Length: 444
Ligand SMILES: *Cc1c(COP(=O)(O)O)cnc(C)c1O
Image 1: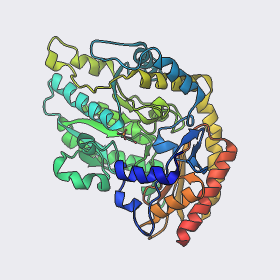
Image 2: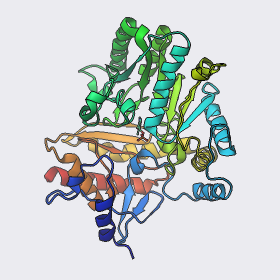
Image 3: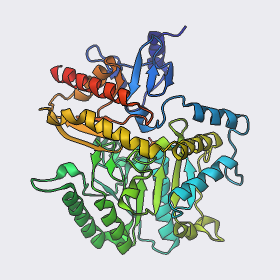
Image 4: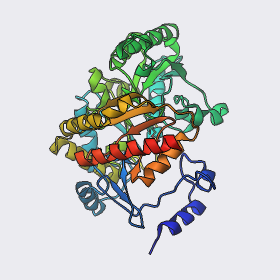
């Protein structure tokens, strides 16, 4: 029988864990725990020694309907007996066709062409390459640069880091990167006295306008995370920014890329976050939740106009990008099962009630002396903790695990991003334990 101890010892020898300074797992004091997981069910993760943890961050924002969901499991079992994978160049299969059609319908038909990859960073790279190449094909050879928002995150491959403004991830590789231009973030926390979130959005859009006026001839696209900049600490902003950015991009002939890898699939309160601004992007990147948190899958959706820029007799004017697992049938089938759940179970409406309950449970924290900027949009809630402890996030994380919940603060920002199958009672448990954890982490 496997035990926690045995598996974590073997893991620390053989597995190089992501986003981790591995030495911290071995440190004598304040060691970062490594948690072996044996199984999952709904919002719960179980280790080998009988402990369970409530997955308060949806396993890095990917899980929508809990672990081992019966309906997604059944769809995958069925798909396994039909077709696991086939090359997508020159071949096609049912899951990838159905998924492309259904996603196009969800964009009101505005993004009718789906390009496939396996992870979010690749989706970013594809959107950037497609934008650049479409301008080249259209005869706008000078459009070779991109704009991104301060604090934006779009993945960590070398190309994606060019539009990612998170120093910790980017600085070590700076010499390898051809950085994009950074424009002001509409982060509502930047409101000065008397300013509203709307004012901040307008101010940031004003800066974007100046930048585009000066540089639009060189700029292919602006890439944004609609409504919530997740990885830099759940920075939330007013939808007005997206409306203004859309208008400016149209006016100056610049593509708008909406990276909904984290905020798509119902997370923000609508199926796509950009719907809340009533705009349509030129490119939409999806990943994370789209497969229900089951299998690596990413999708870049685009317009007829962009597609037409590549449609030609010349091979070199085509988009020759590929990944080995492009359009994987199992991953697409998991995504179809995920969309079935959205269609059949009124997920967006149910989430509204859950989100409201989550907000009400968190409300007492608004007056906590160490808490600032308690905020929420849909199924993401966050607050900033006043603490000068450089180890706050590690301490909070460890303490949370000891309290039976998985929460992983980003710096001093604590956020809750649970799977949509969480019950009201489980929300109460999560918030109660998060509050206990906060007190313990503050005490040290
Ligand atoms: C997670 C994330 C990515 C990168 O996705 P990976 O699958 O981790 O490469 C890109 N953009 C956003 C907004 C993300 O949250």
